[in-house]
Length: 257
Image 1: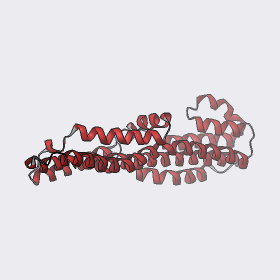
Image 2: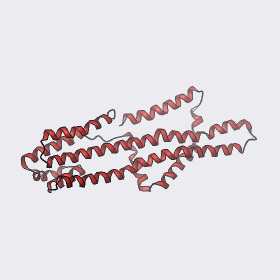
Image 3: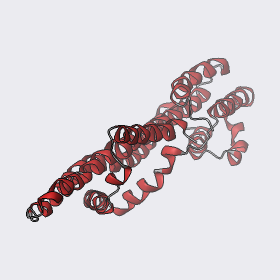
Image 4: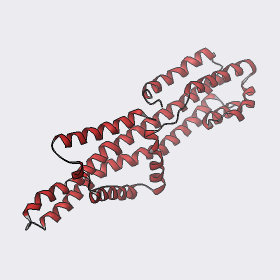
């Protein structure tokens, strides 16, 4: 469970509701199903026009990772790479061939397979960096979906407010209800701005952070495999790999279950 995500959403809503109540308002005043329908429906429609359905579906599936993150033991990956380095130094890089079936990380398995097959370090780096870049390009579309939603939602909220005002202006003969009608009309603007700044844009930022963390670990894995091919001392490899983990440990503090 990502405590930062849950705590942030809870604090945002608590602050807004508390401010409303302090000013003498009521929660019921901002609970307008029609306004929510206009904002969410309009935003989803605009996003569907911009992105293919497969990308949108993947984005909504990935939304859960904003609040729940899979625990990955990166230190175990470093230890595994160091064990491979020690074995390769004793028995040669070809001796790692028997360990390939036991590797669950597909990226590490592919890089190590190329290494065992005798691929030169420069060529291996080129191949695997291309894979990292292609993976990052595909994954980059996921946070972009929520960034676009965060851009559309406030504008759709204004449309909803204007629609509400149009309805109010058509009933000016009931002047006692004009004020209430105007207040209701502006609820759509609240939904648009609120959803953009409390949900869509922060979710995009967190997903992009997850993407960068995953990319950094792949880069660490690649450096480890290349260092093994080059015959670097395992202690030097450990120092190199630990430098990749330093930033990850800082960004993941507070996300422990």
